[in-house]
Length: 562
Image (cartoon, rainbow, N blue to C red):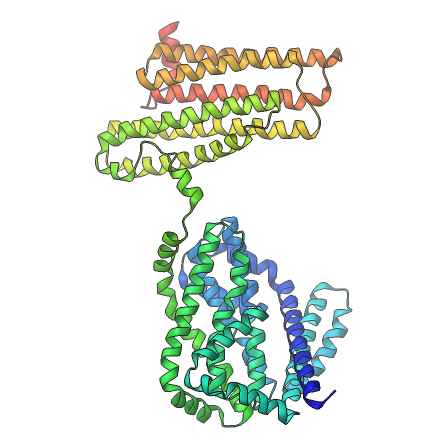
């Protein structure tokens, strides 16, 4: 094996050792600070500077913008963080990760040999059982290994003149000199392949320290690296929800725009920028390595802060570019209300009532599906049941928001009616939840190989028939607000209470007589209780419609029919 081949192999070994050390240090830091950092990320609000600062701090601690970005993506996917918050955190993370480049630059300084000694101390600490000491040991070991990898890379390059000349000749090609964007592209590709800007920046700093790269060449490579680092975040968005994908798109746009603007500035002023950094940090290889690390920091601080005002506009753009198909589908389930109606309160009052009735029909249909599901255990309509439940939840939120907005535009009388509608939609939504509970109970019964007997099914049917009568009567009340209809509804609700007691007694008698499996008992009593609660919600709806003023309808009914 000739010297050139040995140097190239040593270079790659050094890069591998550097990445291992960086990951080890990052792992130790995350273990030490992870839980508290997660709590901190969850608590933040919509202050862009707070989000940016937290992203910077967290990444400076864990030394991985990828880890911070993936953590933010996880919170966005879970719905505990908004796109706005997540993007600002990621932008801050790109500033925090620049510390790695600075550490890499220090490897060319004489103090780096002391960090190698620290690695040995870290390894010793890792054998101690106490968790916090073990984590500190992992951090120190990772830091020392990181420097060892950097020194190995630098030694591999500096120790072989042919390799130095080869790298210089490649990056000194006329094409790169005439058209620096090619260097930006190479920086992006290398970082995308490594999936770590810290690793690629560290390697670039090492090459500068060895004299294989000049400051100007490394400057363009760094700009490319800031684009390539987004690849890890984009990979994390694969399979994510629409907000996750929007986050990835916004960050990618910002990084590309920042790099292009910086390129437009650096290209014509490259000589002046190079001279300025060389003057400040010295013309030596060590000075150039430190200069490129500082350039990386300055670039990220300036351009990521400058990007903060763009997050909101880009979020609106991402909404237009990445359509929420599921949200569009849900929006189509609204048939009568629209925010344009808020300017005509009289029409809006009529339409919101029609939308509530539409929601009521969906809830009734789903209750029938859920009821049949638990009795027959037929799964052919599961998809429809689940989709309808989602529609009910969506309509509930849409109507509630519409009522809040409409409250400011109506008369005092209509305001009381709107107040009653809040209760109505809540009760309808709860009925939808009971339908979904039937579905979930059915799944549990199937998994336990349980079925209701024909006797039990007939008992359920007797109670469900009363529920159906109550539904029909409630639709009548929506139209006529009749106290007679409300009295009938009230009587039917009493009937369900009596049936609950009767059916429960009959069920326990069958258990005592051993004509019913005791394993069915929790599902039997749950179904009867759920049906009785549905009846309670229906009578609540009737009271709210007939008496929107808030008077006690039970008391008035008692007075009228005694």
